[in-house]
Length: 85
Image (cartoon, rainbow, N blue to C red; front, side, top):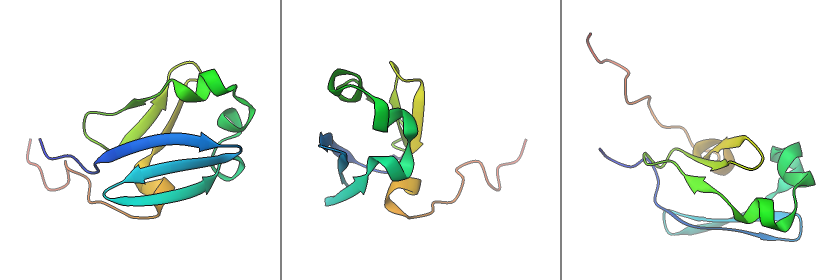
């Protein structure tokens, strides 16, 4: 299975999510993308999982999921588009 993104790092600098993906670094204001992350403790923010497909990040302690595409402003075609049953 091809990965949508290569997530190289997820960290926080104050209220900024620092996302290193596909060889680039993005700085995202947490309040703009997730109220749960904005209110989370450093320990809750530090515990995350990247989906095996590379499409998203999950914070289990917060029950929060964010798509990489949405965070960095790109669009991928759905891998199931055009698949025949």
